[in-house]
Length: 127
Image (cartoon, rainbow, N blue to C red; front, side):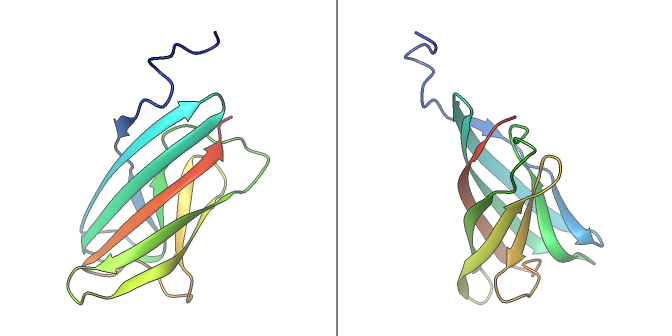
């Protein structure tokens, strides 16, 4: 067998690094989980923005495994603002160059908002 039965579908923690297209976050946290079966990487991540500082534009998080470089893939995400209770299900997440997932608000507004929690889940092909 190519994979041990005990390792298929086993989830492991990973800690994404969070950055902004421009500026910097003052207080942000992130956690994630991932599993890999062959070249298929399944992951989920949560980003909590307490104080966005000067962060603007897309919010970037590192992926747990380097993606296959030829294709740009899209995964899904949603945003919940814990301060206002606002819920948005239209985050656009694009795997671009390198190992960073770029998170955009579908309305063209930066998801870097104080009190936002970004919840991302997806599958992509590993390098």
